[in-house]
Picture: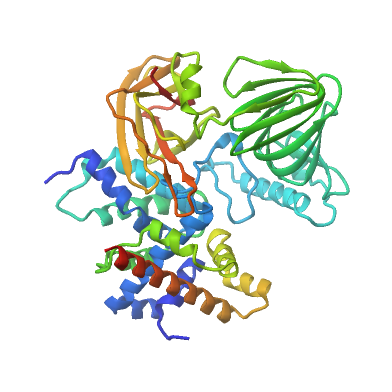
Amino acid sequence: MTMDRDAILQAFLAQRLDLLAYLGALLPAGLVEDVFQETFLVVARRWQDFDATRPFGPWCRGIARNLARKACAVRRAQPFDEHAADLVSAALDTPDPEPALELTQLRHCLQQIDDRQRGLLERFYAHGDSLALIAQASGRSVGAVQVALSRLRASLLRCIEHRLRTQA
Amino acid sequence: MSTDPVEPLADALRAGHWDAEQAALVRADPAALLRLRRRLCLDAGLCELLRSGQSARLLPRRLPRPARQAHRPPGSARGRPLKAGHWWLPLLAAGILLAIALAVWPRPAATPSATTAALPSVATLIGPQVNSSLDLPAGTQVQAPARLRLADGHEVELQQGDLALAGTADAPRLHLHAGALAVSGTGASRLVLTTPEAQVRVLGTQFTLRCDAGGTDLHLITGRVGVSRSGSAAERFLDPGASWHLAPLGPLRWSVDAQHPTADGFGRVAEDGIHAAFRKVDGIPTWLVELPVAGGVPAPVTVSTTLSLARSAEIAVLVICLRPDGTWATNRQATLTLPAGQQTLLLDWADLPALPLSDTDASGAVVATRVLVMTWAEADGLVVQRVALNALP
Protein backbone atom coordinates (compact mmCIF):
# COMPACT_ATOMS: atom_id res chain seq x y z
CA MET A 1 0.00 0.00 0.00
CA THR A 2 1.39 3.42 -0.85
CA MET A 3 0.41 7.00 -0.23
CA ASP A 4 1.30 9.76 -2.62
CA ARG A 5 3.24 12.79 -1.55
CA ASP A 6 0.21 15.06 -1.39
CA ALA A 7 -1.65 12.63 0.84
CA ILE A 8 1.33 12.44 3.16
CA LEU A 9 1.69 16.19 3.46
CA GLN A 10 -2.03 16.48 4.09
CA ALA A 11 -1.81 13.81 6.76
CA PHE A 12 1.10 15.65 8.33
CA LEU A 13 -0.79 18.90 8.58
CA ALA A 14 -3.91 17.12 9.81
CA GLN A 15 -2.05 15.93 12.88
CA ARG A 16 -0.09 19.13 13.38
CA LEU A 17 -1.44 19.73 16.87
CA ASP A 18 -0.44 16.23 18.02
CA LEU A 19 3.09 16.86 16.85
CA LEU A 20 3.20 20.27 18.50
CA ALA A 21 1.89 18.64 21.69
CA TYR A 22 4.68 16.08 21.48
CA LEU A 23 7.41 18.64 20.90
CA GLY A 24 5.92 21.14 23.36
CA ALA A 25 6.08 18.58 26.16
CA LEU A 26 9.69 17.67 25.46
CA LEU A 27 11.50 20.77 24.27
CA PRO A 28 12.12 24.30 25.51
CA ALA A 29 9.60 26.67 23.94
CA GLY A 30 12.24 28.24 21.70
CA LEU A 31 13.02 24.96 19.96
CA VAL A 32 9.49 23.68 19.36
CA GLU A 33 8.73 25.64 16.25
CA ASP A 34 12.12 25.04 14.68
CA VAL A 35 11.94 21.29 15.15
CA PHE A 36 8.34 21.25 13.91
CA GLN A 37 9.35 23.00 10.68
CA GLU A 38 12.33 20.73 10.26
CA THR A 39 10.10 17.70 10.72
CA PHE A 40 7.79 19.05 8.04
CA LEU A 41 10.68 19.45 5.65
CA VAL A 42 12.04 15.98 6.27
CA VAL A 43 8.57 14.48 5.78
CA ALA A 44 8.24 16.45 2.54
CA ARG A 45 11.57 15.15 1.33
CA ARG A 46 11.36 11.58 2.54
CA TRP A 47 7.71 10.88 1.95
CA GLN A 48 8.63 7.85 -0.13
CA ASP A 49 10.18 6.20 2.93
CA PHE A 50 6.81 6.01 4.65
CA ASP A 51 5.32 2.54 4.81
CA ALA A 52 1.59 3.08 4.45
CA THR A 53 0.82 -0.18 6.23
CA ARG A 54 2.06 1.44 9.41
CA PRO A 55 0.52 4.33 11.36
CA PHE A 56 1.53 7.77 10.20
CA GLY A 57 1.68 9.60 13.56
CA PRO A 58 4.44 7.49 15.09
CA TRP A 59 6.48 7.76 11.87
CA CYS A 60 6.34 11.55 12.06
CA ARG A 61 7.10 11.49 15.76
CA GLY A 62 10.12 9.28 15.07
CA ILE A 63 11.47 11.90 12.68
CA ALA A 64 10.62 14.66 15.15
CA ARG A 65 12.31 12.75 17.96
CA ASN A 66 15.57 12.42 16.02
CA LEU A 67 15.51 16.09 15.09
CA ALA A 68 14.62 17.10 18.65
CA ARG A 69 17.49 15.03 20.04
CA LYS A 70 19.85 16.66 17.57
CA ALA A 71 18.51 20.15 18.30
CA CYS A 72 18.99 19.67 22.04
CA ALA A 73 22.56 18.48 21.49
CA VAL A 74 23.58 21.09 18.95
CA ARG A 75 21.94 24.09 20.56
CA ARG A 76 23.04 23.11 24.03
CA ALA A 77 19.54 23.15 25.41
CA GLN A 78 18.47 20.77 28.15
CA PRO A 79 19.31 17.12 27.40
CA PHE A 80 16.59 15.32 25.45
CA ASP A 81 14.59 13.14 27.83
CA GLU A 82 14.07 9.75 26.15
CA HIS A 83 11.83 8.42 28.95
CA ALA A 84 9.59 11.46 28.78
CA ALA A 85 9.43 11.02 25.00
CA ASP A 86 8.24 7.43 25.48
CA LEU A 87 5.60 8.57 27.93
CA VAL A 88 4.31 11.37 25.70
CA SER A 89 4.27 9.01 22.70
CA ALA A 90 2.22 6.52 24.70
CA ALA A 91 -0.26 9.29 25.57
CA LEU A 92 -0.54 10.48 21.97
CA ASP A 93 -0.98 6.90 20.73
CA THR A 94 -3.97 6.45 23.02
CA PRO A 95 -7.07 6.55 20.81
CA ASP A 96 -9.46 9.35 21.67
CA PRO A 97 -13.14 8.54 21.09
CA GLU A 98 -13.96 12.27 21.11
CA PRO A 99 -13.31 14.50 18.08
CA ALA A 100 -9.82 15.98 18.04
CA LEU A 101 -9.31 19.44 19.48
CA GLU A 102 -9.74 22.12 16.87
CA LEU A 103 -8.07 25.50 17.05
CA THR A 104 -11.19 27.18 15.70
CA GLN A 105 -13.21 25.94 18.66
CA LEU A 106 -10.47 26.77 21.12
CA ARG A 107 -10.16 30.28 19.69
CA HIS A 108 -13.87 30.81 20.17
CA CYS A 109 -13.82 29.46 23.73
CA LEU A 110 -10.89 31.72 24.59
CA GLN A 111 -13.10 34.66 23.78
CA GLN A 112 -15.52 33.57 26.52
CA ILE A 113 -13.05 34.00 29.38
CA ASP A 114 -12.42 37.27 31.19
CA ASP A 115 -9.28 39.40 30.94
CA ARG A 116 -7.85 38.19 34.24
CA GLN A 117 -8.14 34.56 33.21
CA ARG A 118 -6.72 35.32 29.82
CA GLY A 119 -3.82 37.16 31.42
CA LEU A 120 -3.03 34.08 33.47
CA LEU A 121 -3.07 31.84 30.41
CA GLU A 122 -0.90 34.28 28.49
CA ARG A 123 1.70 34.40 31.23
CA PHE A 124 1.89 30.63 31.38
CA TYR A 125 1.59 29.73 27.70
CA ALA A 126 2.66 32.77 25.71
CA HIS A 127 5.41 34.13 27.95
CA GLY A 128 6.44 30.78 29.39
CA ASP A 129 6.43 32.05 32.98
CA SER A 130 6.78 29.34 35.60
CA LEU A 131 4.05 28.67 38.15
CA ALA A 132 6.37 30.03 40.85
CA LEU A 133 6.95 33.27 38.96
CA ILE A 134 3.25 33.78 38.33
CA ALA A 135 2.51 33.01 41.97
CA GLN A 136 5.10 35.51 43.16
CA ALA A 137 3.85 38.24 40.84
CA SER A 138 0.22 37.73 41.77
CA GLY A 139 0.74 37.25 45.49
CA ARG A 140 -0.79 33.78 45.45
CA SER A 141 0.59 30.38 46.30
CA VAL A 142 1.93 28.08 43.60
CA GLY A 143 -0.86 25.66 44.41
CA ALA A 144 -3.50 28.34 43.94
CA VAL A 145 -2.09 29.25 40.52
CA GLN A 146 -1.95 25.59 39.57
CA VAL A 147 -5.58 25.11 40.57
CA ALA A 148 -6.67 28.27 38.73
CA LEU A 149 -4.96 27.08 35.55
CA SER A 150 -6.34 23.60 35.93
CA ARG A 151 -9.90 24.94 36.30
CA LEU A 152 -9.44 27.20 33.32
CA ARG A 153 -8.24 24.32 31.16
CA ALA A 154 -11.15 22.16 32.31
CA SER A 155 -13.58 24.93 31.49
CA LEU A 156 -12.04 25.41 28.04
CA LEU A 157 -12.27 21.69 27.34
CA ARG A 158 -15.93 21.69 28.41
CA CYS A 159 -16.60 24.65 26.13
CA ILE A 160 -14.92 22.91 23.19
CA GLU A 161 -16.81 19.67 23.78
CA HIS A 162 -20.08 21.59 24.01
CA ARG A 163 -19.41 23.40 20.75
CA LEU A 164 -18.40 20.22 18.95
CA ARG A 165 -21.53 18.40 20.15
CA THR A 166 -23.76 21.32 19.24
CA GLN A 167 -22.27 21.46 15.77
CA ALA A 168 -22.52 17.71 15.31
CA MET B 1 -7.92 19.63 44.55
CA SER B 2 -8.17 16.28 42.77
CA THR B 3 -5.50 13.63 43.20
CA ASP B 4 -5.43 13.00 39.48
CA PRO B 5 -1.73 12.61 38.63
CA VAL B 6 -2.19 13.86 35.07
CA GLU B 7 -2.25 17.59 35.75
CA PRO B 8 0.88 17.70 37.94
CA LEU B 9 2.65 15.33 35.56
CA ALA B 10 1.87 17.53 32.56
CA ASP B 11 3.06 20.60 34.50
CA ALA B 12 6.22 18.76 35.48
CA LEU B 13 6.89 17.71 31.89
CA ARG B 14 6.64 21.32 30.81
CA ALA B 15 9.01 22.33 33.57
CA GLY B 16 11.49 19.61 32.53
CA HIS B 17 11.51 17.65 35.78
CA TRP B 18 8.96 14.93 36.29
CA ASP B 19 8.42 12.19 38.76
CA ALA B 20 8.92 8.61 37.54
CA GLU B 21 6.43 7.23 40.05
CA GLN B 22 3.73 9.62 38.87
CA ALA B 23 4.55 8.75 35.26
CA ALA B 24 4.26 5.04 36.00
CA LEU B 25 0.80 5.62 37.49
CA VAL B 26 -0.35 7.46 34.39
CA ARG B 27 1.18 4.93 32.03
CA ALA B 28 -0.60 2.08 33.71
CA ASP B 29 -4.00 3.68 33.30
CA PRO B 30 -5.34 4.11 29.74
CA ALA B 31 -7.89 6.67 30.94
CA ALA B 32 -5.12 8.75 32.52
CA LEU B 33 -3.05 8.47 29.34
CA LEU B 34 -6.01 9.75 27.38
CA ARG B 35 -6.37 12.70 29.78
CA LEU B 36 -2.67 13.40 29.37
CA ARG B 37 -3.10 13.35 25.62
CA ARG B 38 -5.94 15.86 25.81
CA ARG B 39 -4.03 18.07 28.19
CA LEU B 40 -0.93 18.11 25.97
CA CYS B 41 -3.00 18.90 22.88
CA LEU B 42 -4.77 21.69 24.75
CA ASP B 43 -1.39 23.05 25.86
CA ALA B 44 -0.20 23.01 22.25
CA GLY B 45 -3.35 24.76 21.07
CA LEU B 46 -3.09 27.42 23.77
CA CYS B 47 0.56 28.04 22.93
CA GLU B 48 -0.36 28.39 19.27
CA LEU B 49 -3.21 30.82 19.80
CA LEU B 50 -1.86 32.87 22.67
CA ARG B 51 1.64 33.28 21.24
CA SER B 52 0.32 34.37 17.88
CA GLY B 53 -2.23 36.81 19.22
CA GLN B 54 -5.03 34.46 18.21
CA SER B 55 -4.18 34.44 14.54
CA ALA B 56 -4.19 30.90 13.28
CA ARG B 57 -0.69 29.98 12.26
CA LEU B 58 -0.26 27.39 9.65
CA LEU B 59 3.27 26.70 10.47
CA PRO B 60 4.04 27.82 13.96
CA ARG B 61 5.54 31.22 14.49
CA ARG B 62 7.71 33.09 12.08
CA LEU B 63 10.63 31.53 10.35
CA PRO B 64 14.02 32.52 11.67
CA ARG B 65 15.91 35.12 9.72
CA PRO B 66 19.63 35.29 10.31
CA ALA B 67 19.77 38.82 8.98
CA ARG B 68 17.54 39.97 11.81
CA GLN B 69 18.90 38.32 14.90
CA ALA B 70 16.79 39.72 17.64
CA HIS B 71 17.59 40.30 21.24
CA ARG B 72 15.45 37.84 23.13
CA PRO B 73 15.04 37.33 26.82
CA PRO B 74 17.51 34.81 28.23
CA GLY B 75 16.14 31.33 27.97
CA SER B 76 14.18 31.90 24.81
CA ALA B 77 17.07 32.41 22.46
CA ARG B 78 17.16 30.46 19.26
CA GLY B 79 20.18 30.13 17.15
CA ARG B 80 21.92 28.35 14.39
CA PRO B 81 24.17 25.45 15.20
CA LEU B 82 27.58 26.56 16.37
CA LYS B 83 30.62 25.40 14.54
CA ALA B 84 33.15 23.32 16.40
CA GLY B 85 35.79 25.52 17.99
CA HIS B 86 33.36 28.36 18.54
CA TRP B 87 32.73 27.37 22.12
CA TRP B 88 33.21 30.94 23.25
CA LEU B 89 30.29 32.25 21.22
CA PRO B 90 27.59 31.39 23.79
CA LEU B 91 29.61 33.17 26.46
CA LEU B 92 30.06 36.21 24.27
CA ALA B 93 26.38 36.17 23.28
CA ALA B 94 25.34 35.81 26.91
CA GLY B 95 27.49 38.80 27.82
CA ILE B 96 26.01 40.89 25.06
CA LEU B 97 22.47 39.86 25.93
CA LEU B 98 23.08 40.68 29.56
CA ALA B 99 24.51 44.08 28.72
CA ILE B 100 21.66 44.89 26.36
CA ALA B 101 19.06 43.61 28.79
CA LEU B 102 20.50 45.79 31.53
CA ALA B 103 20.42 48.78 29.25
CA VAL B 104 17.10 48.34 27.55
CA TRP B 105 14.99 47.21 30.45
CA PRO B 106 13.57 50.00 32.54
CA ARG B 107 16.01 50.08 35.43
CA PRO B 108 18.88 52.31 36.50
CA ALA B 109 21.94 52.91 34.42
CA ALA B 110 23.96 50.22 32.79
CA THR B 111 27.64 50.31 32.10
CA PRO B 112 28.92 49.29 28.68
CA SER B 113 30.57 45.93 28.99
CA ALA B 114 33.86 44.81 27.54
CA THR B 115 32.13 42.08 25.57
CA THR B 116 29.86 44.61 23.87
CA ALA B 117 32.77 46.85 23.03
CA ALA B 118 34.56 43.92 21.41
CA LEU B 119 32.09 43.92 18.53
CA PRO B 120 31.91 46.87 16.12
CA SER B 121 28.98 48.99 17.14
CA VAL B 122 26.29 50.29 14.79
CA ALA B 123 24.72 52.80 17.14
CA THR B 124 25.00 54.08 20.68
CA LEU B 125 22.10 53.87 23.06
CA ILE B 126 21.91 57.21 24.84
CA GLY B 127 18.57 57.09 26.55
CA PRO B 128 16.16 57.21 28.11
CA GLN B 129 16.82 54.16 30.27
CA VAL B 130 20.57 54.60 30.60
CA ASN B 131 22.58 57.32 32.26
CA SER B 132 25.75 56.43 30.43
CA SER B 133 25.86 55.48 26.76
CA LEU B 134 26.04 51.92 25.50
CA ASP B 135 27.43 50.81 22.14
CA LEU B 136 25.15 48.38 20.37
CA PRO B 137 26.44 45.94 17.73
CA ALA B 138 24.67 44.73 14.60
CA GLY B 139 22.11 42.08 15.41
CA THR B 140 20.78 43.95 18.42
CA GLN B 141 17.09 44.61 18.69
CA VAL B 142 16.19 47.69 20.68
CA GLN B 143 12.82 48.13 22.33
CA ALA B 144 10.97 51.44 22.67
CA PRO B 145 11.38 53.84 24.28
CA ALA B 146 14.99 54.32 23.27
CA ARG B 147 17.19 57.06 21.86
CA LEU B 148 20.11 56.13 19.64
CA ARG B 149 23.00 58.20 18.33
CA LEU B 150 24.71 57.21 15.12
CA ALA B 151 28.33 57.78 14.15
CA ASP B 152 27.36 60.59 11.71
CA GLY B 153 25.57 62.50 14.47
CA HIS B 154 22.01 61.58 13.51
CA GLU B 155 19.76 60.66 16.36
CA VAL B 156 16.93 58.16 16.25
CA GLU B 157 14.18 58.30 18.83
CA LEU B 158 12.28 55.03 18.92
CA GLN B 159 8.82 55.79 20.26
CA GLN B 160 7.04 52.51 19.67
CA GLY B 161 7.98 48.99 18.64
CA ASP B 162 11.30 47.26 18.14
CA LEU B 163 14.19 48.41 16.01
CA ALA B 164 16.70 45.92 14.62
CA LEU B 165 20.26 47.13 14.06
CA ALA B 166 22.31 45.96 11.10
CA GLY B 167 25.11 47.24 8.87
CA THR B 168 28.13 49.06 10.19
CA ALA B 169 28.87 52.30 12.03
CA ASP B 170 29.67 53.94 8.66
CA ALA B 171 26.61 52.58 6.91
CA PRO B 172 24.01 51.66 9.51
CA ARG B 173 20.80 49.89 8.55
CA LEU B 174 17.86 49.99 10.91
CA HIS B 175 14.76 47.87 10.44
CA LEU B 176 11.45 48.88 11.98
CA HIS B 177 9.04 45.98 11.73
CA ALA B 178 6.17 47.84 13.38
CA GLY B 179 6.22 51.01 15.43
CA ALA B 180 7.16 54.65 15.22
CA LEU B 181 10.35 56.66 15.34
CA ALA B 182 11.75 60.09 14.66
CA VAL B 183 15.08 60.87 13.03
CA SER B 184 16.93 64.14 13.39
CA GLY B 185 20.29 65.35 12.22
CA THR B 186 22.09 67.42 9.66
CA GLY B 187 24.59 66.76 6.95
CA ALA B 188 25.21 63.68 4.87
CA SER B 189 24.43 60.25 6.21
CA ARG B 190 24.58 56.70 4.96
CA LEU B 191 21.79 55.61 7.24
CA VAL B 192 19.15 53.43 5.61
CA LEU B 193 15.88 52.68 7.38
CA THR B 194 13.69 49.82 6.27
CA THR B 195 10.15 48.72 7.11
CA PRO B 196 8.41 45.58 5.84
CA GLU B 197 7.55 47.44 2.64
CA ALA B 198 9.72 50.53 2.40
CA GLN B 199 13.27 51.69 2.27
CA VAL B 200 14.23 55.19 3.36
CA ARG B 201 17.64 56.65 2.65
CA VAL B 202 18.50 59.44 5.05
CA LEU B 203 20.13 62.45 3.48
CA GLY B 204 20.64 64.85 6.39
CA THR B 205 17.20 65.41 7.70
CA GLN B 206 14.49 65.34 10.32
CA PHE B 207 11.42 63.17 9.87
CA THR B 208 9.02 60.79 11.54
CA LEU B 209 8.38 57.25 10.41
CA ARG B 210 5.55 54.99 11.43
CA CYS B 211 4.73 51.52 10.19
CA ASP B 212 1.97 49.11 11.11
CA ALA B 213 -0.40 46.73 9.37
CA GLY B 214 -1.69 49.60 7.25
CA GLY B 215 1.71 50.27 5.71
CA THR B 216 4.47 52.82 6.15
CA ASP B 217 3.97 56.57 6.69
CA LEU B 218 6.74 59.10 6.57
CA HIS B 219 6.49 62.81 7.29
CA LEU B 220 9.48 64.91 6.34
CA ILE B 221 10.11 67.97 8.53
CA THR B 222 13.43 69.27 7.22
CA GLY B 223 16.16 68.12 4.85
CA ARG B 224 15.81 65.37 2.33
CA VAL B 225 15.10 61.65 2.16
CA GLY B 226 15.07 59.15 -0.69
CA VAL B 227 12.24 56.66 -0.44
CA SER B 228 11.46 53.47 -2.34
CA ARG B 229 9.53 50.27 -2.02
CA SER B 230 11.70 47.53 -0.59
CA GLY B 231 13.56 45.80 -3.37
CA SER B 232 12.73 48.44 -5.93
CA ALA B 233 15.37 50.58 -7.60
CA ALA B 234 12.86 53.37 -8.25
CA GLU B 235 13.74 55.91 -5.58
CA ARG B 236 11.98 59.25 -5.19
CA PHE B 237 12.97 62.23 -3.09
CA LEU B 238 10.72 64.10 -0.71
CA ASP B 239 10.70 67.82 0.01
CA PRO B 240 10.26 69.25 3.51
CA GLY B 241 6.63 69.16 4.64
CA ALA B 242 5.82 66.21 2.39
CA SER B 243 4.16 63.05 3.62
CA TRP B 244 4.52 59.65 2.00
CA HIS B 245 2.41 56.55 2.41
CA LEU B 246 3.28 53.09 1.17
CA ALA B 247 0.73 50.26 1.38
CA PRO B 248 2.01 46.91 2.58
CA LEU B 249 2.74 44.11 0.18
CA GLY B 250 1.37 41.40 2.45
CA PRO B 251 -2.39 42.06 2.56
CA LEU B 252 -2.31 42.78 -1.06
CA ARG B 253 -4.23 45.23 -3.10
CA TRP B 254 -4.22 42.95 -6.03
CA SER B 255 -5.98 45.30 -8.42
CA VAL B 256 -3.49 48.05 -7.70
CA ASP B 257 -0.60 45.79 -8.47
CA ALA B 258 -2.32 44.56 -11.60
CA GLN B 259 -2.50 48.13 -12.85
CA HIS B 260 1.10 48.75 -12.00
CA PRO B 261 2.90 45.60 -12.98
CA THR B 262 6.35 45.22 -11.55
CA ALA B 263 9.49 45.32 -13.62
CA ASP B 264 9.29 41.62 -14.38
CA GLY B 265 5.88 42.10 -15.95
CA PHE B 266 3.88 40.39 -13.27
CA GLY B 267 1.62 41.73 -10.54
CA ARG B 268 3.31 41.29 -7.22
CA VAL B 269 1.22 39.42 -4.67
CA ALA B 270 3.70 39.00 -1.87
CA GLU B 271 7.41 38.97 -1.49
CA ASP B 272 10.13 38.56 1.03
CA GLY B 273 12.80 41.11 0.28
CA ILE B 274 15.01 40.24 3.17
CA HIS B 275 17.59 37.55 2.79
CA ALA B 276 15.66 34.45 3.53
CA ALA B 277 15.86 32.18 6.50
CA PHE B 278 18.52 29.52 6.34
CA ARG B 279 18.80 26.29 8.25
CA LYS B 280 20.50 22.97 7.80
CA VAL B 281 17.66 20.50 7.96
CA ASP B 282 18.55 16.84 8.08
CA GLY B 283 22.02 17.83 6.95
CA ILE B 284 20.76 19.68 3.87
CA PRO B 285 21.20 23.47 3.66
CA THR B 286 17.65 24.79 3.25
CA TRP B 287 16.19 28.22 2.73
CA LEU B 288 12.72 28.80 4.08
CA VAL B 289 10.51 31.75 3.28
CA GLU B 290 7.00 32.22 4.56
CA LEU B 291 4.82 34.74 2.73
CA PRO B 292 1.59 35.80 4.45
CA VAL B 293 -1.03 36.65 1.83
CA ALA B 294 -4.04 38.17 3.53
CA GLY B 295 -5.86 38.87 0.28
CA GLY B 296 -5.86 35.31 -0.98
CA VAL B 297 -3.91 34.03 -3.94
CA PRO B 298 -5.19 35.06 -7.35
CA ALA B 299 -4.73 32.94 -10.44
CA PRO B 300 -2.67 32.36 -12.39
CA VAL B 301 0.50 32.92 -10.37
CA THR B 302 4.16 32.17 -10.47
CA VAL B 303 6.61 31.89 -7.64
CA SER B 304 9.84 33.62 -8.51
CA THR B 305 12.91 32.78 -6.51
CA THR B 306 16.03 34.85 -7.00
CA LEU B 307 19.02 32.85 -5.96
CA SER B 308 22.71 32.51 -6.53
CA LEU B 309 24.76 29.37 -6.80
CA ALA B 310 28.49 29.10 -6.19
CA ARG B 311 28.63 26.31 -8.76
CA SER B 312 26.26 24.40 -10.95
CA ALA B 313 23.98 22.26 -8.80
CA GLU B 314 20.65 20.52 -8.67
CA ILE B 315 18.18 22.48 -6.59
CA ALA B 316 14.67 21.81 -5.42
CA VAL B 317 11.92 24.32 -4.73
CA LEU B 318 8.88 23.24 -2.78
CA VAL B 319 5.95 25.64 -2.56
CA ILE B 320 3.06 24.96 -0.25
CA CYS B 321 -0.04 27.08 0.08
CA LEU B 322 -1.63 26.74 3.49
CA ARG B 323 -5.14 27.74 4.45
CA PRO B 324 -5.76 29.52 7.74
CA ASP B 325 -7.23 26.36 9.27
CA GLY B 326 -3.94 24.54 8.88
CA THR B 327 -4.85 22.46 5.85
CA TRP B 328 -2.91 22.95 2.70
CA ALA B 329 -4.54 24.03 -0.52
CA THR B 330 -1.93 22.93 -2.97
CA ASN B 331 1.74 22.41 -3.46
CA ARG B 332 4.28 22.24 -6.22
CA GLN B 333 7.80 20.98 -6.31
CA ALA B 334 10.38 21.58 -8.97
CA THR B 335 13.79 19.98 -9.19
CA LEU B 336 16.25 21.22 -11.76
CA THR B 337 19.91 21.71 -12.43
CA LEU B 338 21.01 25.33 -12.60
CA PRO B 339 24.30 26.88 -13.65
CA ALA B 340 26.49 28.89 -11.29
CA GLY B 341 25.65 32.55 -10.74
CA GLN B 342 22.63 34.63 -9.89
CA GLN B 343 19.33 33.80 -11.53
CA THR B 344 15.61 34.05 -11.03
CA LEU B 345 13.66 30.86 -11.18
CA LEU B 346 9.98 31.00 -12.05
CA LEU B 347 7.83 28.20 -10.77
CA ASP B 348 4.71 28.27 -12.87
CA TRP B 349 1.41 27.95 -11.09
CA ALA B 350 -0.63 28.95 -14.08
CA ASP B 351 -2.66 25.76 -14.21
CA LEU B 352 -4.23 26.29 -10.83
CA PRO B 353 -7.51 28.03 -10.11
CA ALA B 354 -7.67 31.10 -7.92
CA LEU B 355 -7.25 30.33 -4.27
CA PRO B 356 -9.39 32.63 -2.13
CA LEU B 357 -7.63 31.36 0.90
CA SER B 358 -8.03 34.08 3.44
CA ASP B 359 -10.49 33.57 6.18
CA THR B 360 -11.89 35.45 9.12
CA ASP B 361 -11.75 34.27 12.68
CA ALA B 362 -14.57 34.42 15.21
CA SER B 363 -13.89 38.11 15.88
CA GLY B 364 -14.04 38.92 12.19
CA ALA B 365 -10.31 39.57 11.85
CA VAL B 366 -8.72 38.44 8.62
CA VAL B 367 -6.39 35.52 9.10
CA ALA B 368 -3.70 35.38 6.50
CA THR B 369 -3.04 32.49 4.24
CA ARG B 370 0.60 31.53 4.09
CA VAL B 371 2.68 30.47 1.18
CA LEU B 372 5.72 28.55 2.28
CA VAL B 373 8.64 28.38 -0.15
CA MET B 374 11.46 25.99 0.65
CA THR B 375 14.56 25.84 -1.50
CA TRP B 376 17.47 23.52 -1.10
CA ALA B 377 20.46 22.06 -2.91
CA GLU B 378 22.41 18.95 -2.11
CA ALA B 379 25.62 20.96 -2.25
CA ASP B 380 26.68 24.06 -0.34
CA GLY B 381 26.79 27.39 -2.14
CA LEU B 382 23.09 28.18 -2.60
CA VAL B 383 21.90 31.57 -1.40
CA VAL B 384 18.25 32.56 -1.79
CA GLN B 385 17.97 36.30 -2.07
CA ARG B 386 14.34 37.00 -2.73
CA VAL B 387 11.11 35.12 -3.09
CA ALA B 388 8.02 36.64 -4.62
CA LEU B 389 4.58 35.46 -5.51
CA ASN B 390 3.51 37.06 -8.77
CA ALA B 391 0.19 37.11 -10.54
CA LEU B 392 0.40 36.74 -14.29
CA PRO B 393 -1.25 39.63 -16.12
